[in-house]
Image 1 (cartoon, one colour):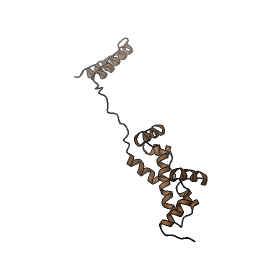
Image 2 (cartoon, helix red, strand yellow):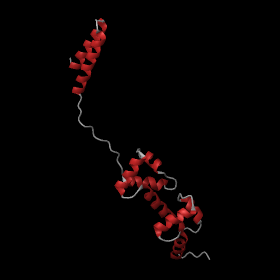
Image 3 (cartoon, one colour):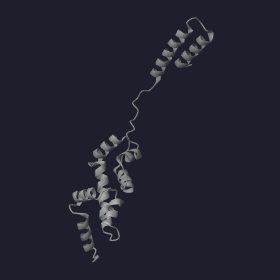
Image 4 (cartoon, rainbow, N blue to C red):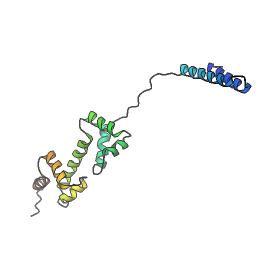
Length: 163
């Protein structure tokens, strides 16, 4: 019989016999049982289960949700705390989460600008921006021209004449 089993048997016997000071004896034996269990426990460091973060998974998630994604929603999707997720994205990719989303939105805006059937106002909504001035500011920072200028150039390259 193992040491732990012997101690447990002794605790049960003392309790059932209702000897004098049985409560104190049982507590003392339980302490011994606890220490014995700790000694038998293998405390080899458990492997850390650091979340597996893949840039491709992030890119796929952003591709599918760029128009209405938030940092909190993305962190939740990956099962991470938002602050940790933000730090991890920056650490692994060199860009912030917002920069990734803005980059994807700008790519989509450029693709949509090549289509004459969609207005700039509709493009702004489709790519997830709320205001025209903010969109124009971001677009200018990214492409160094206005959406209207880019659209005109895209139409010229595609030989689309709307006049």
